[in-house]
Image (tube, rainbow, N blue to C red; front, side, top):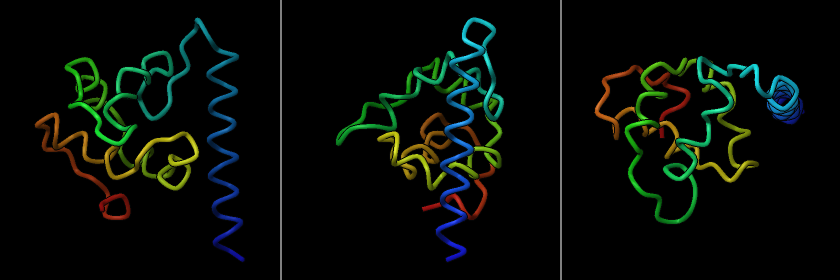
Length: 106
């Protein structure tokens, strides 16, 4: 039962961030050190069956991302067609030696 309520809380947090991003719009809300208006730069690299490598613009976002913060949303990513394994593989694909929290690996 605790697992279900934990997942529900994560989904609610993601929904809140999405609403904030929509409301903030031009102001540019930031989620885990990533401007919401720029999240689309990494979308192709984390979705689909055969995603392309991340772009330079995506890598610049990842370089400044708060990976511990993003890890809190790992279970909610599939609801947005984002493959969590691909998302947390971006630092390595971008050739950054960033610490991936253990709970977000694999």
